Length: 225
Image (cartoon, rainbow, N blue to C red; front, side):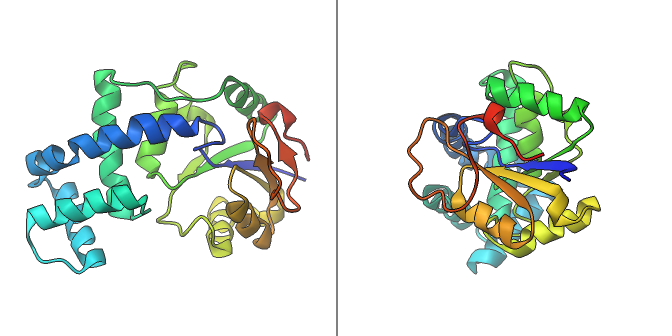
């Protein structure tokens, strides 16, 4: 029996265009100035050191900034980049530059599932900090209290079965009692390989390559528990 819902964000609970067309450009435009302004703070120092270690860079600040911008352009899921993006987005949310997007059907069903006793978790390539910010600033209000935990790529790659096993172990459930929702088939394949139930969210798209995963056009169509 399903006891928990683990959900992706981009293209699943939230519009892909919000992330691609609003959040990513906002962070890219502000990253150089943000790093220069906050480069002496312990958390930013740690993230810059992690960037240099991953890329094999020297101690220069400009070189690290150039690498971070290159990772944005490559859509690289580098943990220090994701953490810095979350810090920049936090400023944007606080200043009212944008509001976190969550589909109405997703907000409604997440509330229903939580009230029915299901535990809710998030697994996204964006940092846990960025996930919380998005759900804290939605048109439906602050939804962060609905979720029992947030997981990002520091847990592991989203297309690796071991990441889903690690999440199940972390939340104290067997994988078979967790339903994973995503719009990416390769992520669902990995979750299924770990033993989780799966459902593909295909919002208004033709899904000829859905594989063997159940398909839902929105959260109202998610079934299986």
